[in-house]
Image (cartoon, rainbow, N blue to C red):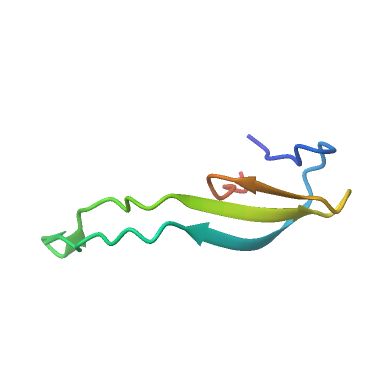
Length: 64
């Protein structure tokens, strides 16, 4: 899936910043690997290079 600007449909945009909740998760390791999932909510902000408007996604685009 190619992510597109929800305002103009262009697929050319810049990453601006990320925000997340501040939920602390106690790190739990098993056999040297972190086993606990990150319970924080993340929001990624972008600016469209075509129309200049900003938009957010609840995931970071994969680029594939």
